[in-house]
Amino acid sequence: IPGDTIKIENGQVFLNGKILQEAYIPPDSKTDARGVAAEGQSITVSPKNYFVMGDNRAFSSDSRDWGLVTFDKVIGKSALVYWPIQNIRLVKDPEYAN
Image (cartoon, rainbow, N blue to C red; front, side, top):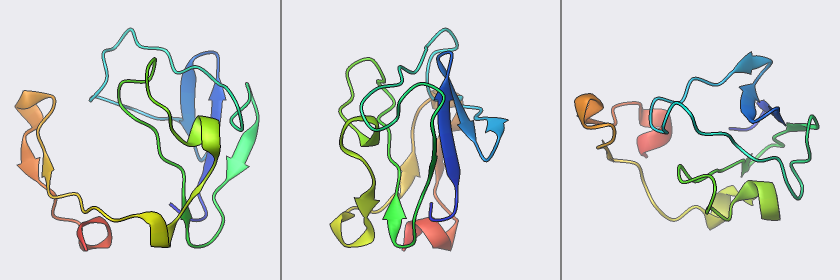
């Protein structure tokens, strides 16, 4: 979200200097740095923008390739987390659900 800093290094994603814990991708998955998200480069998300990545990292075309997404281009809403199945739940955080 705006203000966050993202870095991809050695196959891991860092969010604000800490390794991002991603239970929704297989534990042996590696995130490739590429395009605008070059290896070890920090990206700070500017106001009214988002850095997005697909959970199928090896085959996702996302912010690593084409950069930040402006808020006006976000057309969907998160309503449900369904994977991994043991974490199925409704999205309750109004910041992200509206």
